[in-house]
Length: 136
Image (cartoon, rainbow, N blue to C red; front, side, top):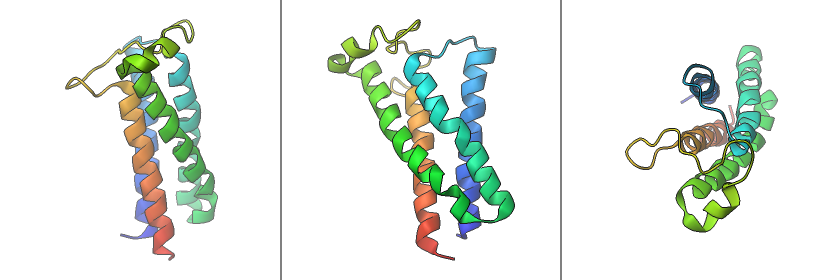
């Protein structure tokens, strides 16, 4: 797979995650909690970073995306633990206007919004690593 394909996958994943988060908040009316906002802060710039890198056909522009997606993996993992593991739930019960333990969606008993964001961050991070590995 060419490096530009990996860039496209990273950009398309970031765009899908951004649109998904906007769908949940603007159309479904789910108010984002504090950790959801942190994930948005890390995800939204990735659309611009990878989009600019694609348009200019310059992989060097995309380097900040590797850092943001790496941090995003940890933020999403922590938020998921706050939702699913009782030891972490006391930390997330009062993290803002909306408790971070709230699960607006819970598909198949384990797929929540932080899980979806974490999956997107992992896909973006791995796509970027594969792009770097190709050294085109």
